[in-house]
Length: 309
Image (cartoon, rainbow, N blue to C red):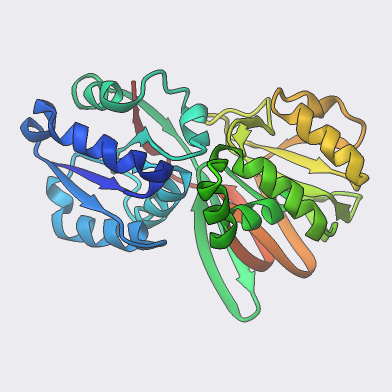
């Protein structure tokens, strides 16, 4: 049995249209695929937990049709079952994890390959232990974790009013650019202690700090060009305080990964990172927003299997 979880709203409805086409494929029925659709933010997490608890022994893999937000929810829901393979059929607006996986196919072609002749990629993903006041939680990410300008831009991009305005104006594809310009108006430098593998970073003020599993975020930006999913260590991007006009220049160079050559941009590697803010930090995980006073980031103990083309 293959479990197919779809966010029907992903990609402005393109995920639902793709699901309808895939359900007509002979391989969908012959492989005993069962389809489930999410109904609200966070639903994919609870949905996949319920399904796996009920059908665990019969499940061969979980297939996700959607964007990075849906993948983030499903991966967190599957945390107790790292042995279950996951297949990704990208249908969101960003699809950065698909870029990191280096998928060559899309849509029905990709579905056919996953069903018939999948390649199996095995690697450890990111784990974050969050402390917020008296509360604690453990979460997982497949793209990146970050605080600073990137988390502010992600928070702006996720605002429902902001997204609706762009969709109505047919500028949804430029969502991240507009969110960046709007986020700059609200942005304040991050004040935090950063420890990498137990060693304290000298600076305590940052434009942003990003811990990356692979090069891409923000719809194709090469934020961490030296990173790779199978690496045992993260790529950590630290940007010292820079002026607003230099931020615009940085934004223009990051798509090609050229920002790494700038004086105040640093890319280092590490397997464990601790962030401790002087006040509550706005934290993005795969573009989803959380709050923390302190967070500890590391690779998971067990690798997860992904089905690719």
